[in-house]
Length: 91
Image (cartoon, rainbow, N blue to C red; front, side):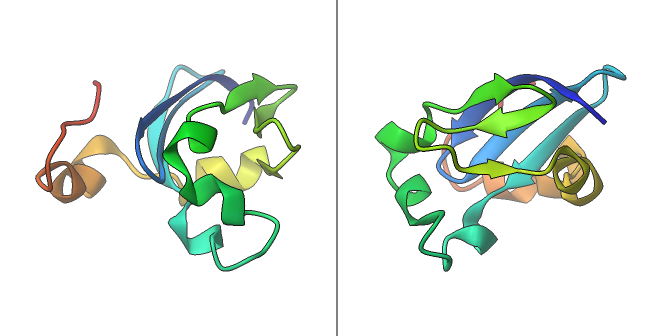
């Protein structure tokens, strides 16, 4: 499942478009306990995410396997309660 587009929609949440044209939302916050991903807690750094190869990557080479992004990604309806906390997801 290749990622073809990524948008940081709010701190810790990525909107991912896959090669199949499916859109899923992925919460990165469970990874923050690892020192490798600690930087992602900073919004200015988090939003520098880009598509790299089949997945997403940040400037200091943090990445997450595309299979993980796809399998653990959620549909908008599954994460819409998070949107109620303030800003809304991009659809």
